[in-house]
Length: 155
Image (cartoon, rainbow, N blue to C red):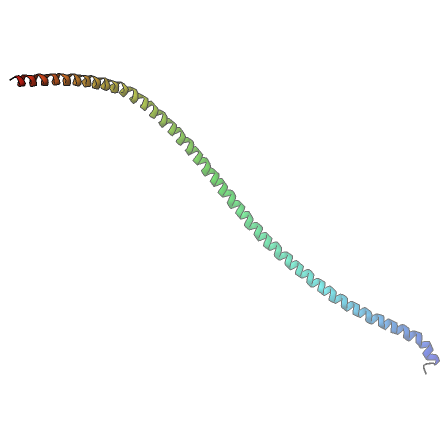
């Protein structure tokens, strides 16, 4: 029966229909594959967006922390510089005061040294004279003692 005129006339139609059916099934499989791939792509894209948003938030938080640290460091730096300037001024004042005291000490030393130098020299001279006088008196005493001995020896 397949060789009949109806079958022969329908054969190209059936082949065409089969071909269309195959194309339609293939098209449906491709559409389903496209939907699956599109859904996977959308999932990956959504995950990427979530990750990117998380990273943005993390970096924004870190950036804020770093900005706060920088402000703190700048504030501390300004405070340290003010302290250093104050200490430099104190140091300059102390150096000036020390220089003034050293100058006054030198003047006092010179004054007392010159004042007492003359007195010390007078006392040395006086001591020398008294020593000479003592030596002279000692010699006289020895002479007198010898005279006394010779008088007592005679008597």
